[in-house]
Length: 338
Image (cartoon, rainbow, N blue to C red; front, side, top):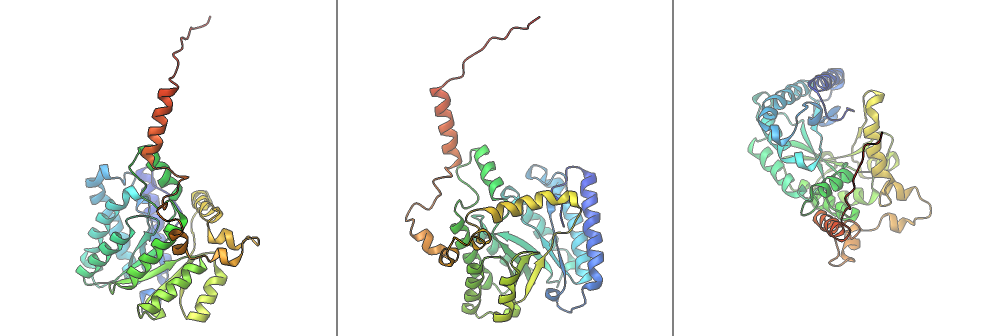
C-alpha cells in the first residue's frame, strides 16, 4: 500500500481505512487452505500513527498497537499474509516492541500469516533474526520473514552524518550488504519457526539462496522468492521452471499522488552503479562482473572494508570544526538604509 508516514491523526485514520478496505477486498480471493498460497498485504507502522517515535513510546504502545492488532485480526480472519514493513533504523527497537505486543494477542494464536520485513543492509540484521526466531518459538508459532536488501540507505547515511554518530547503522559497500543478505538467508533456513521470503532481482543472490536451501535440506515449498511488479520477471520465471520455487509479486497500490516517494526509492536502488538491475541492462559490463562473488570482492579489500568515500560521521564533524578554526567567520555590521 503506497503512502508514507502520517503527519496528522487524520492521515493515520485515512491510511487505516485504506488498509482495512484492502484486506476486505482481498479476502474473497484468499481461497487456499495455506496462508502461503493466498494474497497478502504489507503495512507501514509510520502510516498508522503521526507520532511513531521513541519519545512517544507510551502513547505508541497504546494507540499504534491497537490499530495494528485490529488489522492483523482482520487479516487472520481472511487467512491472508500480513507483513510489517521495515523502515528507518532508529525505529527498529520500537517496532519490535509493537510486534511483540501484537503477536501475543490471543485472537492471533495459531496463525502463521504474520510477517516482518528485515533489511540486510542493517548491521543488526542477524541479532534481529535471532530475536524473531526466539519470539516465534516462545509463542509456539511460525512467522514469515521477508528479507530485502534495504530501501532507505541514502537517508540512513545522511541522518547519521547530521547526528554525528560513531558509525553508520548500515553497511557502506554494496558487496557488504550482499554478503549480509546471504548470512541472513542461512540464518533463516536454520530456523524451524520462520517461513523465509527472499525478495531480490539479483541472479547471483537467487542462485546463492538456492544453494543455501539445498545445504539446509529445504524443499521449494518451505520458502518463497519475491519480486516487485514489473521487475525481474525473466529471472523469477527461470527460478520457477528450473528449481520449482514459488514467487510472490509485490505490487504498489494506491493513489497517484502517493507514488512519488516509492518511485524515488526504486530509482535510487536500481539506478546505482552497483545495482544488479543497472549492471545487467548495460551491454558494456561483462556477465562475469555482473555476477561477481561479493565475498571475493570484500576479501580482496583486505582490512579496508569501510568505504573511504563515506567517512565516519564524527570524522566529518571533526573536519568541519577544523575548517572553521582555520577560516573563522568574519563579523559584519549591518546598517538599516533609508
